[in-house]
Length: 277
Length: 332
Image (cartoon, rainbow over all chains, first blue to last red; front, side, top):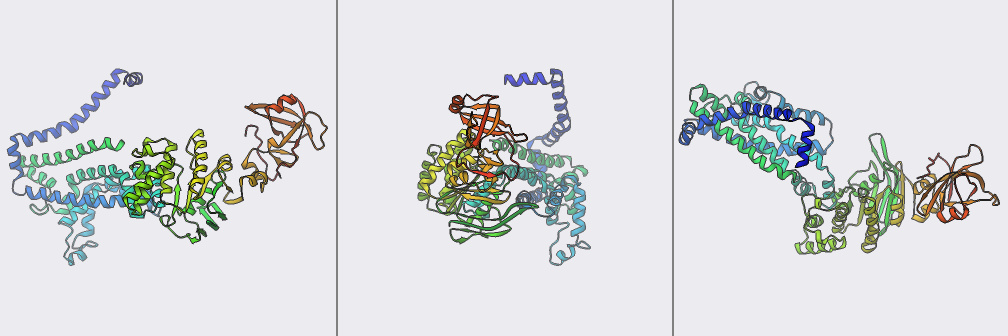
């Protein structure tokens, strides 16, 4: 402890250290903490009863339920495909691997609105690539839950993979080879050796994609059509109620979304130290 | 023959790792694959284990065709240089892994694990995690884990390479004793000629993807097939156009002996009981000769830098003609 203090003093003079702290804390406060706190203040301003009452407004329960459904399905899909793609990227050599790796980052860089538009172009039931065929078989993608799930999966796809890939690279394949030489088949190697090794990274990735899926707005707005009571998710409900001057409802839903994401982050913060043990 | 490798080729891109390699590794023996880094010895071991596939050629283990078998069906135990311990499992769980995969009864597994931990002197660490063990302990655990499944052959890839010199020496003596106790056909890869000479019953020298020589440590040391084997197994020097070991050169203070050539001692390094001399021959253009004598000889003959001496190979010393230039190195 004492030596740490000494080292800090040697590195930077006190005014620099204090200046950096104040700038950082002020920045985070003005940009993140204060605005978020205001949402909570407005949501709970009329008491906890009013908060719950606002959440009971006409179409809000349906929107919350829809968000929950889409989030759970998306997270499950991203969990399974995230693990498969990560293992493929780290453990196997194949042509086009670098292209695949680059493509996975596309959702991080492209605006979700573009993602939504792209999905509409491919899956709309009039002139999309697959839309009419799927429509004939009674599957509606655009303006329905499947399309919203796809949009959400798309935007949250990189989160699990970007957590898993470095961990898989770091642990290497020595343990997996040892397991195989001891008689384990591919499934046993995965279940007994690979999975325990990436467990915490996987949990972290899932929690991140959960938070991201809860809050998805742009892509979902385009593919859902935002039909109140049918394809309106919680984030879309926040926008609509706000524009309809139902501020109480808007703040309440917003606060609930923020709270859910924060719970996710707290869980991660608790899990994180365990990973480094 | 326990392991039969015939005509194995392996390329990594343009690099030829193994070039038409054929060897027979006898049952129940401890065989060393010895050679410089990048010579192909680890690749050969991994092909035997099934962790790597040969481009062409066949591998037979105990009479069973194994060329296309996946590693889990070959019944080989493999020990990795960096232990490859299952980090999230206790020592006992690590050792039990192969038995649990084979669905052996719990009681039998527990008994076998206890025996093996006893064998590798890790009984008191059964419940620790690998991270809480030293390198040597981890490698002993890896060995117990490989032995647990009663493999037909035990393969070790530079097993002591990551350990410090003292532990390495202890462990190789221990491996030799363990092998005598367990009697399983064992093949280990090493680039350390001393390790191979000390531990192995038989040594396969591999260089640049080819087998240079196969033989017992004595055969290899006393009758090296070529200059590579001679120089890889120990220090060499050039005398009269032939490779000779520095300690197989006799030093005289008079010219009385026929065949001895004259020279002057230019350098002298003493390491404990041995003294290494560099002798510049009188014959112009002749390379400097390294000679190793005991401290007693040096004192008896009164050798020092600047002394005029005559040197000759001792009678019956192994020597091979110089084919490629060998780097002269007094301290090698």
